[in-house]
Length: 334
Image (cartoon, rainbow, N blue to C red; front, side, top):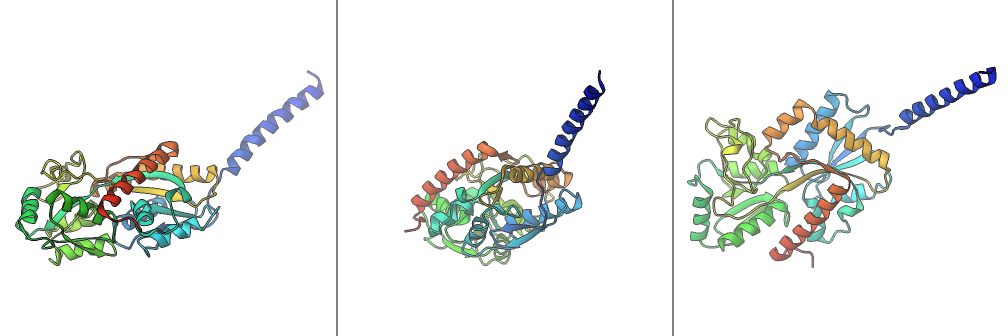
């Protein structure tokens, strides 16, 4: 080989190496703190999950920049959604969503739709449990439902998070199943809802497991049934006698109600695919940690992960389901 040939060969190898190095260097990552918006109050399921993720990311050094959790619960979460919608092209602002992603615009007419954001990933699906105070006379969901049917309308008070949101939609479903209307009492967050039931100020709640777990463990609350098609898989005892797996489905107890809530991540509109990929990969790493596995078990989540087209398709179907439920309940904005 001539000297020129050797030189050309070395130049080609150097160029290829440089291209590979440049590609690695150019992979996007945050260059400043990332605002992690929670469109709900403190103490609720979304807030607890966001703060737990914040801790996992910091503990495992999964990101060079910090996640900063910010609660923006105004307008049933509209405040948070509109802020992220308005941050077009800003990859340093993400939002954790619950089903108010669908219910808030449908109920209020606020100019927002999930398509105004960039879908990132579904982290899990959250369950709903029918809870009563541990001192209540009901040991089963059937006993509770039978008593609701036997009493005059509006005798029972159901506490929930927000108006015309997930908890009130489920309450309307129970109203339909019993033929008796309950008095729905809205509060700002799931933590407040659990405290109201512990204090005996309401008769029941449909809190997420993580929002009531500590009170159940402490002997203050009693779960009657879970609103899913199948029982939970978590067999470790939470109390001296019961695990999550011991809670029957509401359907098996004669209350044919199934409802699961999204726990997902969205980005602002107009971000790049590289930026979406960064967060999808980040949350995959979060889900691989032992801490996340323990969190899923403690909060009795359904461990479902989606991203890309699969997630977008699921979002479209779930939005249509909420439209039907809210139309039937009379919750759609006029």
